[in-house]
Image 1 (spheres, rainbow, N blue to C red):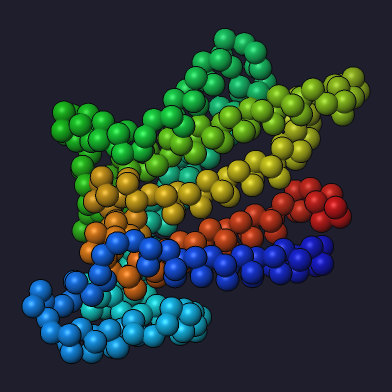
Image 2 (image 1 turned 60 degrees about the vertical axis):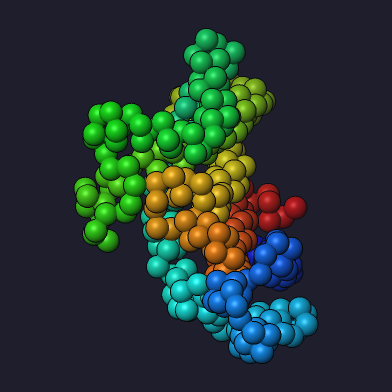
Length: 313
């Protein structure tokens, strides 16, 4: 087991390094001048060169990357061009909000998706299965931003039940805070619900047709025993799907957070793109990418606990 863990960690390190290089280089491919946010329109060449030197933009890109990576490993992601504040503090304030929203959305999506997937798998081929499959396909197909706008129009504008945007004044877990999270959480949960449901349905239907299930039933085992064996067999694959979806909830919420003006990393990333704030853009992408890599590593570590055959393969 220890050898398996060390191998997975060894695989994750070069992936993390490659991701950091990609995060650093991609932002330079976009058009526009990152210094336009801090320089006046009539800035002299001398002033431009001075500002470039202060941000390290006068050095070759390889040197810039080496310096940036060295500082990033120490927790220093640079200084925002548009606000003048430390990028780490900007991201730190936003990532907590995104994590709260992602956890609530994942709780809704994974619980509902897994429950409906098990039901659909047990009733494979029936009318109920077809109905649930249609719901899952609809959840995957509906665009995030469109669903968010529809929910705002119904529950905020027409019924006046829930706030349309913002995060509330309180940082505590109370009804005021939750009321601001309900609509964006439901919007974010739609796609993971459909994906988890479809994956669990396929796993349950496939596992129920295996010989060991037939053997358990033939021995007179109760439904509870059969269900526990079923869950143990589908858990590793289902856990991998859930881990990927949780990563998407954190990294792919830019449109949802923009629609609801939720002060998370998605809204921060959107503002950084619009303002061409390269340090903030690089730092935000790096943190989200490392979260995704770390989450996949955690899933890889947890899978052998459900299925020891993985660590022996």
